[in-house]
Image (tube, rainbow, N blue to C red; front, side):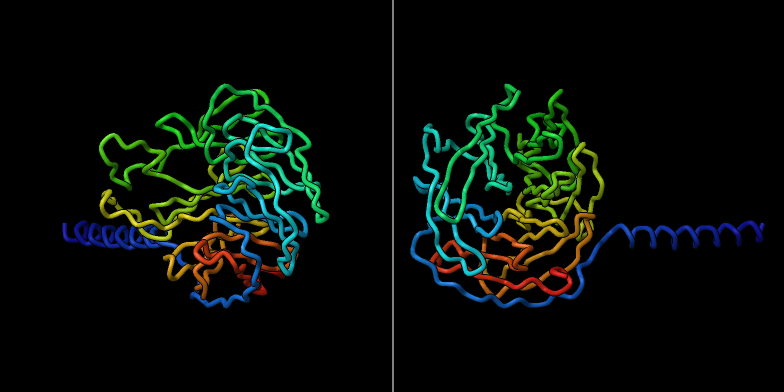
Length: 328
């Protein structure tokens, strides 16, 4: 009996160790030690108003300003010299209804999604000031309000599902498919609060469209999916625990940007923004305390630079040189 009791204790002890090791591996993922990045400042004409999104296409930085009648301003890289503004609101040939914040560089310029009409618009633009909508493609769906619209491979598209049990809908040439369960049980929801609002997120697609990433507003969580809607990686930065509506912290509120190798996303506070760098495998690679209160960023892998704007001081574009391990 003593021998049986002895082995029972040993087995319990080993199980406890294994459980602790397992929970330690899955409980928390850490960035390397934080470093600091200092910006260079480029003074620009007083043109910008409430920049909502930034992106690069070729040698041009594009700012999207939906509060203005002319939606886009164009800046020649790398010095951010002002080129011109174009793309008025309206229903005309080179005009736009409400756009979702989804812009993808193309060899001719960029493409975007007009959420008010379910049309994809292809835009040709160059440094000489030429701006033209070359194609308007109507999506083959009657579903409207396609928020968080992403361009994926093989003429597939992803957006937030209108079904309570799924996060996303995948649209391709043949069908609509809802996919991905919410990470439920972590956030306590307000009365009658829908999952899409409790688990609000910001998404970004790989330039190839082969993957996309999601960063959750109220969770330190990154999810990576492939273009078929399969969850490839889920990375929590903290131990998941139940959070009441009154205890929610906003972690991610600015749209990420990305290049072929990495995803760049802002977190921290408006007074102390932190730039996180993630791999497309869902691994946290680095994070940097920024010296300027930027709320909107874009990346140029070619010029090895992050461009940022402070919405309260839009007469300056800040530039951060990408660290060597990122730009090599």
